[in-house]
Image 1 (tube, rainbow, N blue to C red):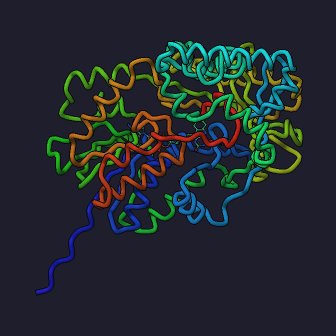
Image 2: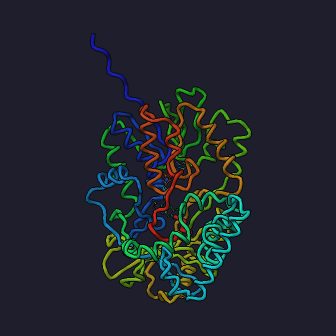
Amino acid sequence: MTPTPREPQHVIVLGAGPGGLTCAHELARTGYRVTVVDRESFIGGLSRTIERDGFRFDLGGHRWFTKNPALDAWFRNLMRGRLVTVERTSRILFGGKWFDFPITVGNVLRTAGVVTSAACLVDWGRTRLADLFGGGRPVTMRDAFRSQFGDRLYDMFFRRYSEKVWGRPCSEMSADWVSQRSKGLSIWTALSNALLRPRAKAQSLIETFLYPRRGYSDICERLREDILSEPENRVILGANVERVDVSDPLRPKVRWRVGGAVVEEAADYVVSTVALPALVGKLVHPRPPESVVASAASLEFRSVVCVNLMLDMPRLTSDTWVYCHDEGLGFARFHEPKNWSPDMVPDASKTSVVLEYFCSEGDAVWSMSESDLVARSVRELASLGLLTKERVIGGFAVKAREAYPVYSLGYADRLQSMKDYVASLPRLAIVGRGGTFRYNNADHSIEMGLLTAQMIRGEVGKEEILRVNTSIEYGEKNLVPAATGS
Ligand SMILES: Cc1cc2nc3c(=O)[nH]c(=O)nc-3n(C[C@H](O)[C@H](O)[C@H](O)COP(=O)(O)OP(=O)(O)OC[C@H]3O[C@@H](n4cnc5c(N)ncnc54)[C@H](O)[C@@H]3O)c2cc1C
């Protein structure tokens, strides 16, 4: 008698951002049946692209960057024929002056002047000495920046921008963010590179990155296309997950609400990219231990409001990003999509701009009307002399919650208790930026998605996934980074 073929294992993935779709893609490729559910009506999560009147807008500019060659090869293969190479030229605007970004020693000398630059250096030396004789391990973001760059540079290039991103003083943030983003970098690295390796420095200034020509969400479009090439796979949008039932730990069930109907399905495995505090605090059933629920309730996210303006002018700046540290400006960063790919505008006579306002759900910026946000953005760009309001032919705002996991003081222990709890559930895995409450870029979430698929296939251990993005070397070569907030 011929054996009946085994039903393929069914995996339900919560969230159709890069992490969730990559995991589903990798599983589908190796014969699993996958169901992806997302509460939104679009795919891409934070990596979405919005099309309006022939203009295309990312939720803040997203570049592709990874230091993992195997992942890069996977990405290039997936996106073959759909990428452009972008030459990166970014600047910081502060105190009415334009500085190169990443900050270079030569540029600071020229722009800030010799006296200020010398003061920065002396100040850095003083801080290093003080740290050597009595400084402990930095606890706060402020301590970490100061110990790496000195008081003066911290104040010039890190404090203002960080406070815009996080909405609180750097002294109330954990040092972890700094070590995650700028490990191994210091004034010393910058100086030695500037003085001892001028050729390497010059090369690094012409940095390029890859970008999907039709906007960043094209990555998720490609993933979905492949997933749906097998008829048994589904990507269900507008489906808000309300419960993840782990009463039977080996056969979890997911309940979601879609178009007024409630659907419940069982799976062999559930992979979640839902914000971890929401997963363990609200969705998992039976309710986790009280201490875990309390940890979940204490963790916060920052949100972002992007204001997208369509402009009747061929170009605003030649930059890929502009970081605006000045406290008088509400937005923290803007980018001009056309400088990333010509396909982001309807024709060459037009351009557009995306301004990022970091905020918290429910605060004054979050609650502003769309027309007020657009008017404010036009006013702020006009105050910089970049445009006049006659050039603006349209504008709208996009709000994204759960955009930035906040590494507040003491967050790490609370996070660990949630991760330990999830680790005790044999058929539930967490992936992604909100999903693991880790400051992931898209490549990290994608890498986690791939590893999670391998883990489900029994090829790697669960702990491998949580190791992604824990030993970051900063992406910028040779130079001192500023706080970026991607
Ligand atoms: C302004 C900004 C700029 C950035 N720039 C860059 C960059 O230049 N390069 C880069 O690599 N990365 C960048 N990032 C980071 C990148 O956007 C994220 O790392 C990436 O999108 C994370 O993917 P993810 O799948 O982990 O999570 P997400 O993209 O957040 O996807 C999670 C999904 O889960 C869904 N979900 C949540 N709750 C539920 C529920 N209850 N039911 C159903 N679905 C649910 C959400 O709708 C969402 O679609 C930037 C982020 C921001 C905010």
